[in-house]
Image (cartoon, rainbow, N blue to C red):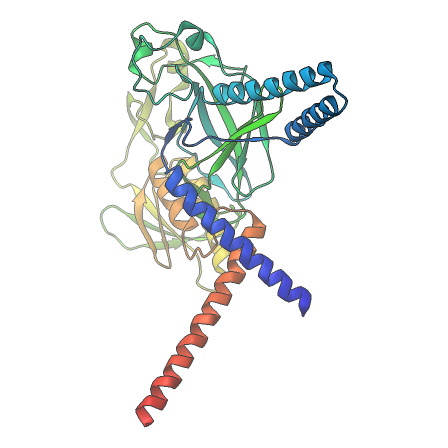
Length: 409
């Protein structure tokens, strides 16, 4: 009993502390698609090696004053001055960065996605972008940001180190560099994303840290890019119900999943390729000869369309996985297909946008999983939610009893 009570108190305290920190960060560093590192969103503290360095310098100072050794006192002063200079240099090096998020590509729950972050060097360390050209020194513009930067999701222990030296020339983000100033350098960082359940999730804050040059101080920040990621369901190969209908509104025929209906077979003409059209209709010989992307158009007086569905007796998660596989299969074949399952009713169509719409609808169907966070925090939030609901029920019961007693009296 005592161990359970301690565990419950610890979980409640940690959850309460994390919620307070999250609120403070929302006010301090509001969500945005791009961030410039300034004094408002950078935190600096000595590392473990830095605290040991400070303690050693103080011990040398005490020994030098106690034994009246001027050389030892001078050495302690030099070490403390190095510590102080490193503080400013570490902050200035980290404040030269500006980060910008890119749109996230969806991925399946049994795979891992990638969150691409563009890291751009700023013209002024810690500047807000409103400084004049005259106030910018040449030394500041020519110095790149150096060292290793460590990225991690807020609340997660897994870290992803990157070397800032591996940069490539990129387009400048502000107008000053376009007028002939020093070009900014851009580097794309790929940060893995894994999630075991399907759905649409908001990404947590991203922590960036750097301890260049001597490792005495650590600069870090917690950035919120207000980005969402779509996690598709895991595809599962199997049979589903295909209801085939023609454009003229004739009767619908139920076919087996093993049969596949082709839209047409008679060649009609060649047209220019448009984004979203199936690649199996591209004339690759024409592309190889002239470089022009053209697709085959077929005569289609009666175009067959299919509605994908699953029997109601099949389990929901299994049905969603089966339909996910069939949607990917139909899109690969370039067929016109729709989706009808429970509350999902999507008209037949084709293309990448239609496929994304179908997969997103399947991923969000009856999705009750918690947000994108680590498993330990998910369990804590679940337990706290249950405890809160129980407390609400008990409080409501007490209120009803009191009201009943008052009515009787």
